[in-house]
Each structure stands twice: as C-alpha cells, then as structure tokens.
Length: 405
Image 1: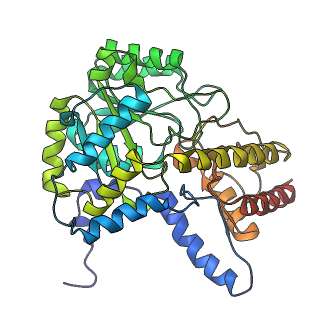
Image 2: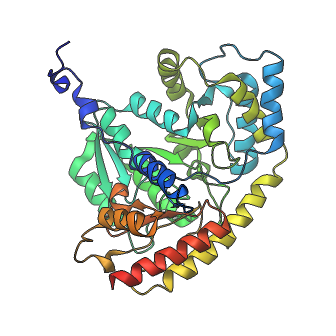
Image 3: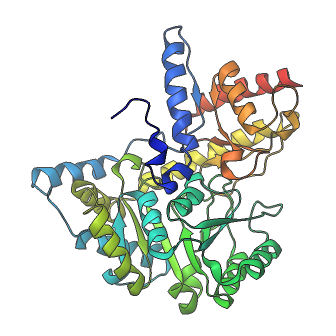
C-alpha cells in the first residue's frame, strides 16, 4: 500500500471520533520521563492512574496457581463459570441485600469491558446517555463508540448530580435518553450518594423509563460515617431497571486480572450474552477461579486497604487545603481527591492540562487534568500510593504552587 495513503478515509467514523484515554496517555509520558530521571537518581511521583499499590492477596494468587495446575485453562461459558456466578450472587446478597439467580449475571474482562457490553446492548445511533460530571473518562467514549450521544449533567456543591439540570435535560431530550450512569463512590471525586439522593434519582428514572447503570467498583472503600447503598436495593421496580456493575480490580488489588461483572434483569443479560459470545469468548479462566476465592475467601485484606486509604485521604486532604490557591472537598470514598486548582490559571497555565503538564515537567508529579473528567477547574490525584510517596508528592506540589503565585 502506498506510504502516503490517508488511512483516515478507510477507517470508521466511530474510531476517528474516539479520544485516547488520558490516564493511559499520561502513563506512557510518565514512564518515559521516569526512565530519564532514574538515571539521575530521581523519579516521578505517580498520582495519575487509579491502581492500588497493594499486591493481590496470597490466597487469591494461590487459587489461580491451583487452577492452572488443575488444567482449568480452557474455554468457559462466555459469561463466566458457574462457581464465579454463584460467588457473585452470594456477594450481592451479603453486601447489598440484592437477590439474583445466575440468569441475572454476566462476568467479563474487567468492569470496563462489561460497561462497553452494556452500551452495545442498549445504545442505537443517536440515542442519548446521561453522564453526571465529573465522570470517569471512559464513560463518554464508550457511548461515542456505540454511536450514542453523551449528555453531561451538571453537579452541585457536593460534586453530585444537579437534579434540576437532570430534569431539564430529560425534558429537552425526552425519549432519546436510554440510560443514566451513576457512579458511587465516584471516580474522580470520591463522592458517595446517600439514600435520599438515591431515591430522588431512582424516582426520576422510573418516571421517565430511563435505565440506570450503577457503577459500584469502589464500594468497599468508604470513609467516616458514609455508607454504600446499592440503588437497586431500593425496591423491585428500580431493581428491574438497574444494571449493577462491579469488579474485583480495586477491592482485591486485581487490576491486571481483568474480572468484572454485572447483575441485571434476565432479559437484558440474555442480550448481553450474545455480545459476549461474539466479542470475547470468555473471561480469562484462571482469573475467574482467582475471583471465586477473592469473593468467597478471607476479606481481611480489604479492610486493611480501606484503613490505609482513609489515613492517606486525611493526610492529602489536609495538605491540599493548606496550600494557598487550592480548594478541595473531602472525599467520602474511593481513593481520589479532586482539588480545584483554577486559582493558578494565569500566564502559561491557562487550564487543567497546562497545570498538569507544568507540574509533571517542573516538579515531577503526575496528576490527571480535570478537563478529561468534564471540568477544567480541577485535577485528579490518586492516593493509591504509599504514604512516603504521598508526602514527597505533596511537598513537590506545594513548592510548585508557591512558584505560580
């Protein structure tokens, strides 16, 4: 093929509209810079990607090794093995008060792949999906990939859905809206919805025939007096229109194992199964057996991580709010803070991308621009890093911010 050929004319409009993941793009840039700095005896403090700094617990790794030794390495049902589905059922009943059968469950290659399968199941060209800002970066792009339209909902002072704006969007777009995405605890904000807020969202969706994707992957990391409530637990009617998504990735420090799952009405699961059949065959077989142990086995490691994250949260929140020019809300869950750094926007720093780029290049600290999450005033800082790295990173950020005043 001619080297000068313009490949864009041959590629799909869907893929050309798609944006590169800002978190993975950042990691590539950080890797290159970090390699250079290590030769000089320094390093980048990584507050970018949301990846636990803990190792996968030994009992889970042992379960995977045993599965391999027992030759449990072949194809399985596309939606997961029976044992994993039963472990998921037990988890939903135990943790969320939700009763399902195996016909209500799909396991996939991580929460991200499960979310993409949901979009493919529901979204036709031109259909709309309600996405509360600030949002996890892949939500809008998965909608675009399914040729849908993301409708971004404004947020209130608590970094949660502005209900007046939600109702306004529904009134304006009506029957084009298929889905609403609810993420609690939230990425990037750490916001947790209380029962009154969940009931209000549920009522609006019931009144307008809008299905809910409830992304609950951070449910085990809740701090202070907050508690996690699955919106599907509020009644049968809301349960029927809710797809509850979770994964072992964050809870058990299993990001690379790629096991996520969803519980939903059996009629929805039947359609998702066809997508699984044709797109991925099945989740990694040894990883499924590891996930069985993760869900059924000893849970002490989860509480150990939660306590450590809470300690880190308290420290980083205090440090951020002590820096002149930064405003930061206290996260109730997950392992992110989302500070407002717009007070530094002047000169060469005009937006969150400039701020993040300058911080990386001059202070060697990696954060994700808030513009990637739908609001340019903020940056996202992951505290899924050791305390010594957090202390060093905050020292660098404080020094950098003082240089901008």
